[in-house]
Length: 446
Ligand code: ASP
Image 1 (spheres, rainbow, N blue to C red):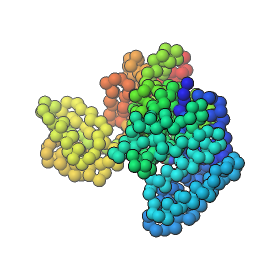
Image 2: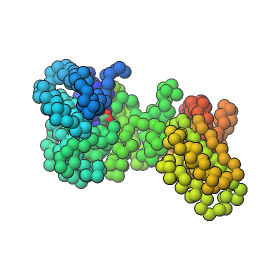
Image 3: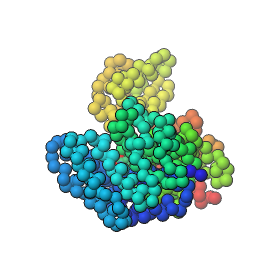
Image 4: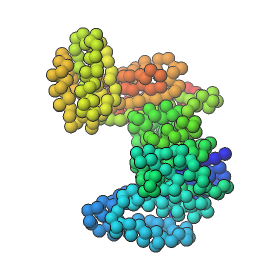
């Protein structure tokens, strides 16, 4: 059994968190590949090491002294070293970084040092091998990860029967120059490694016990989602629920490796298991019809009505081309007879709304055109909805009882999700009412 484990920044924020990580690692010999983020925030007022490194880079670029920021970074690692009695030569490590800074900084190199130093400390503390990501995570010049080469390098560089710690978030180009991923990229490193070593499971340790059915800021103590499919997760994260970097899903999904989201501060909690297919588990533990409820505020809906346009070939294409020309990505296009709506995130259209509307009036000549702002979209996601007739009906009547006006309703053809549009001000109320109806009430009737 091989488990790849990734610890996020909050799991390695200080020496107390390092001790929790050790407990997790020591309690399961299958946890052989350990990927770490850079130290995250210890408290609300604290700063992530990666943020401080980006700030340092900006200071260097503008020729302003970075000493006070660099001192904060040093302080964090010296405290970890001293608290845990480590031998790592931090003076030497920081000298090297400062030499680079004096020469003019390479941003990717600088910001990768957070993961590098955290990985060095963690490897020593866990008595594991340290494997520099620059030696194993291979980028192509186009910025994509070369999985085959990464697999070969990993096989060459790992020592049998020794645990390895690999810093997340960065790798190297074919010429050896360090390259970082997008923010939160350590999730991707873990996933790529899980793919390359054919892991049985990819554990992603963070500070929450997996995915919750709804946002805890809206629903007090929501239920945890024990199992979720990759497809459901995609819908949930697209609409706002984010625990995992979007790009971390593909490398494991293609090999059918499950991701287990776990909480370093509550290691006995089984967290959420993300899998291609939950049917075996579902047979044992039948899921709720609704797996999760998520959503976002601030959409704009542009609706046009034009008699007989439904019969006009190419009408929709003409309309959508205008949005394309302004590079506005479209969320949804609900269509009924002679009425077409285009829903987009308000922030994407703010700068060009009136130009787009002008073009629509000129080129499409609608009989009527309406713009509605302050719309929230809520996605009700669930693989269990397929078997349940009348889901949309129950939803509509529940909203009716609670005087929530539905502006848009759209069910995906695979019946995996229903998306409703309501006014921003009804967003929280609508989520509460869906949760009460489809989760709380269902549990009471069990
Ligand atoms: N340390 C990086 C960040 O803060 C990468 C990561 O944590 O995954 O974005």
